[in-house]
Length: 473
Image (cartoon, rainbow, N blue to C red; front, top):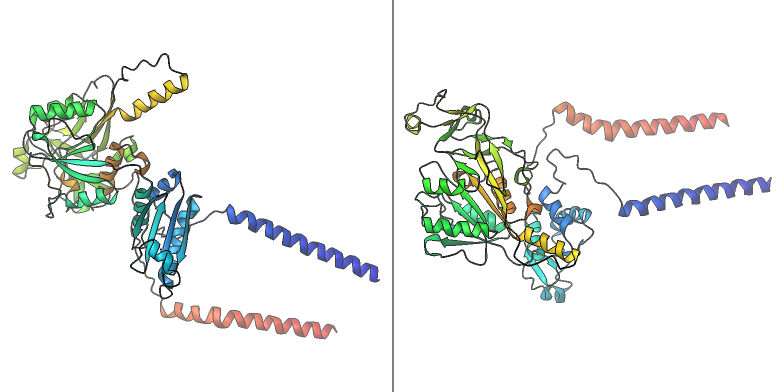
């Protein structure tokens, strides 16, 4: 009898050890390999595509140090939850929290003067942030991992949009959006420049109202053929010199105005086409947000693209739109499609062109195969001229840039021109709070079911089991 009891005890002990071993093994695996699911309707606990792309591309260690004291428990927990998402997407991301009151030496080392400051660092670079926001953290990461500084020039002298103007038609908000993406913005008078500055990574020409001189266009052409990038935003009007210039790159600027009566559904004027159709290009890949382009002209691909230039239509209006060629009639309020005179939609209002410069005259034939391939790839990467032409500049003005997807589209164009394809995506958005109002019956059910009915059911079940066992004895 004792032997049998010992046998049962050993079996039970072995089963317990086996179960505990399985639990520990599963827990150890799940600690390093696990999957998160965000079931909130607004995806509050999911990082944006842009942030995930940044995290997947980082090659060196990133560390965030949060300095919070004992009175900031809620803020610290909020940041911790956010940083957990960052660490989930990259093994090179880590974080820690320090109480500056208990560790003044480390606070002094980072020159912390305000509670709630977080320091993002990588190597010898560091960036401080005060807000607990995904956008701020991601931008700080970009600053500490980016090599060098990319500079964007805005042209002046032809009635272009002013990047310092805070009025509705100004471009100050666009400038700030670019700077928040960690690029530097400068201005340039093309008329006084024999060539673009050596530090120019991109030239933006935002809505010129006066002709661009031949000498200026020659400067721009040389810049593009040397691998430069240019973003033209050309409003409706008569600019024949510029139209002839972009034609050399397979782009046709039409003298018309795009009208779309479907825009009235969105409560806007027919002269502000709502775009939901996008071409096949990295700028608009997986882009599903509507964009608005007020007073835009059509921008088409030429029938025959020049050799060595790849041209793609970027954005198109709805099939219900058309290109109005009689601008005088439109100004009189006669918004009617005229068969044979106006062009029926969809209408292209944005075109992108890329061209590769021939390899340098360096003789690569005698170089090792691996070195030769690296040289070819390097030439392709650095010598590709890129151009984007949009038939409107107002979509990026202060009063329009924050409408739906306008800002995302504007920054996607810039990222592609700067060869920062990894950053082309939808930027972090703020979450919206939702309220749920309970009826009187629902409030009573929430009280009675979990607090009274369920405990009572368990107590009643226990009493019944107790009585049954007592009767069996």
